[in-house]
Image (tube, rainbow, N blue to C red):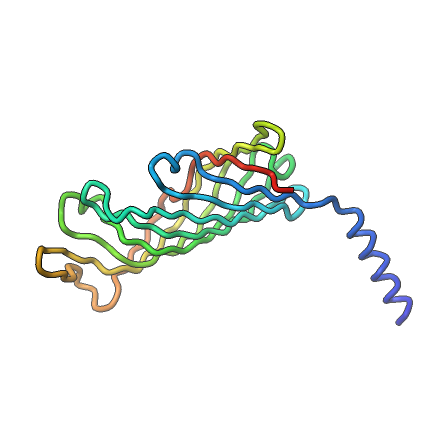
Length: 189
């Protein structure tokens, strides 16, 4: 028993001391910031080629040109870098969920909008490179399946009624691009 415990402690200490400190980057999406959409995240290094990123997107706009445009979305993504973590080409698998109050494109110029939740499962491809010391640029595009559960509403000056025929929730599923941009990243450690 003592020999087994000593062996486990020896290997554990070798593993711990041979590991360099894992890096963490905080990041923000430059493409969405000018239109007032917040998309920020944190990417944590798991090993020499793997990272885990968590990010969220907030579109706080109740209306853009008379159309509903509120989105609150969170996403988790595992990434594999072909060279080294935070350097050059990578692929990732992601899952996310969010709340929305939006006007779908085919209902623009009407008084109809949709309110509900969405689940996403997909993949991302991207390229990350060092811009300056402690600063990276991450260019990426991702998409996959989007499963939405929502209610459709129609607004009039005096009432709010459901226009869809669904008894509880309307459901839809599509394959769509749902994430992309240019993230500026700062190395915290």
